[in-house]
Image 1 (cartoon, rainbow, N blue to C red):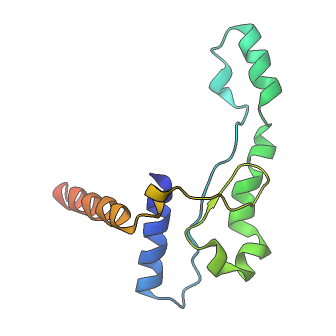
Image 2: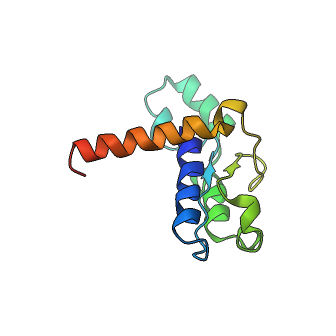
Length: 120
């Protein structure tokens, strides 16, 4: 769903004012060793530590999306893109369902209707 949102949000930005350089990007940070594994049994905690990245390494994709000169200079390439966890900054391939503009529009319209219904 986040990818639908990102792509729809980018369309909204572009329609509102194409001159404003806002680039909406969704991303997967990867498996990051934060507190999520704290409740596992010790052998599983160890395994989670071995298989996951440190929080600093997990932040690389977010930092790339927010501050990379590559994104700024190739903005059209990154508009509404989905960045994979590995390697950092690589644009992932989107499935057919996610590329469906009608589904994305439906999600956007439904959300707007819901938010109006609760006076937001």
